Length: 189
Image (tube, rainbow, N blue to C red):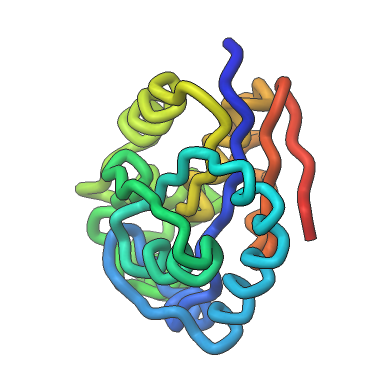
């Protein structure tokens, strides 16, 4: 399946990222380093924004804060399909908490994408993948997306034709821009 060109920005580091605490769809503000990540993205994405692509962002605060900085006032549409995976009872816990309280789930899912999607009461992988694909299929032209790490792994994996295990192994850089086009990704840093 072909999709329009996508420039994907993961939000900058948050207080909970720094604590290795699972955010899911809960809120945590950007750290000073996270603000610097968004400023770095602003420099990388500026030439793209001059072409006036469609811009979308997750409704979650960390992505909105990143979009405000990185897009430098360019208008963007908030789309609920771009929210991070809902991680059920894991939201608000540290990865260490999950390892202690849910040792079997933690042990069987060493990568965050799999772990978050196996959370009791969570969204699950099929639903998460489905809403991301639905968003991507609705795109009509080159698009800038400001969203989240796990969402980005799935979106990048869809573009690159990767199976779930390879999606889960993708790096989750902050302060960079992933350029997704013609079945491949490149990274602007």
